[in-house]
Image (tube, rainbow, N blue to C red):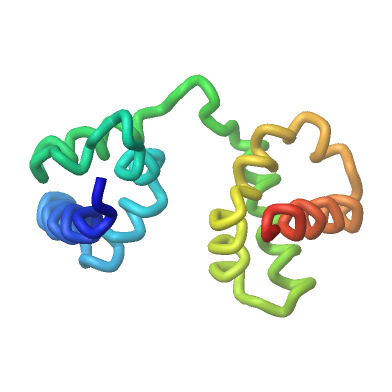
Length: 138
């Protein structure tokens, strides 16, 4: 598989998403990159890079359908709490914190560990997040 075809596929898909959803292309790109669908483009077994843009669009939309681990209001509140407090502690914007959480899958860690983590104090949670990020940078 040549990774060089994937940027072409993503750019074509972003234009289609932009057109269908009536959103700017940069928002369409974020929609694609932030989706569960994105990692499948690199999956050798799925071979999604062979699909036409319309088929990729349908797969992208299906990837956003709720699954059994849809976050509850409390989980979303907890995730937002973590993003905002991490941003404040590290003197970065909330968007930068969110981007960092996505890059190192901190958001999934927090969602999956919600039952235990939300009972901890703010300082303990932030230390845990920092340790998690540090371990995943390696």
